[in-house]
Amino acid sequence: MGDEENLAYALELVDSLALPMVLHTAMQLDIFEIMAKSDESLTAAEIAAKLPTENPQAPAMLERMLRVLASYNVVTSDVEGVRNDARGEVLCEE
Image (cartoon, rainbow, N blue to C red):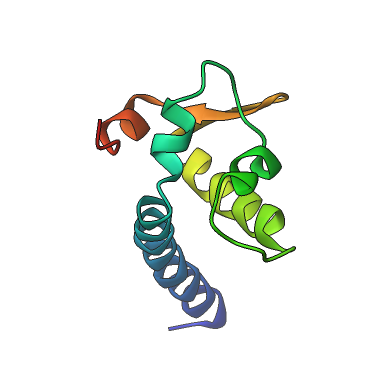
């Protein structure tokens, strides 16, 4: 395999691992339930404020997670924030 094929394969492996890890973490943190309880889009900072953490990096970390979820249409992102998509609603415990 050439360098380009190796790079493409490596990116494919990373991408295939990212979604399951982010989904697992989002479900452990009840991110989908937090969004489901809101009638409006929420920013990463608003969601992070509802999490049981004191980590000042939580909003930035959550923003990255939400971008991954949005790229797979699990959540919908707009200028105001994010909200559950139909796929995200399925992941709620309600």
